Length: 225
Image (cartoon, rainbow, N blue to C red; front, side, top):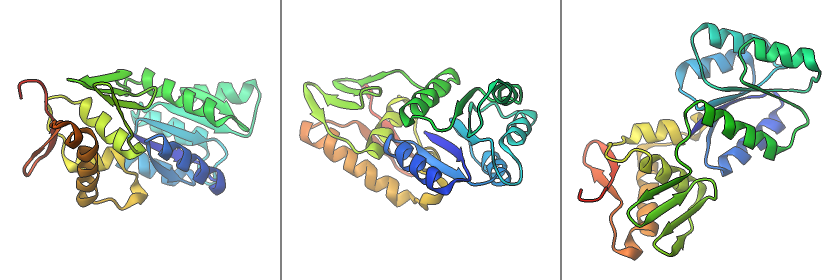
């Protein structure tokens, strides 16, 4: 799931990107309003975390322009300001939620999840495919009674595929949704992660969950397929 983070404080932006990345999000980072508009025009995001105090175009103007362009991506505004007037202005320009600095990372993460959920971009909390179970809230993968340890990227990859039973998912789609703009990821990297995932969820159990569709991509194998 891809997030756009717009924050001019580079140390904070790096920390948030690392934290969200550890949660399995792909995070693109913009440090000013104009770059934020470019990113939003080039990519589709599950949510935007938008600082208000930005060089060039501030967060209010970025948010207003996105809404005028018909972009309905959920927006969480961050600001060092506080007070009722600032919150009112943020929401009136089209933001969906507001969080004042300094903030708890845990609170930001829960607010972000809630926004994505309300925006319709989240999926069922527990995904099941035969005896394979993926608990997204608990970050637990299990086949039968055996727990399986996955990296954040493997977990996100498996969740993305399990949320699309019966659909062929291309490598380009996986790259666009699970890797951020700065990752310089390639189709080969997708293949490496899929192979690693198969070695964990399939090989030890004599199962087949992810099937390669030659020249197209991958799909998860449903019962009887």
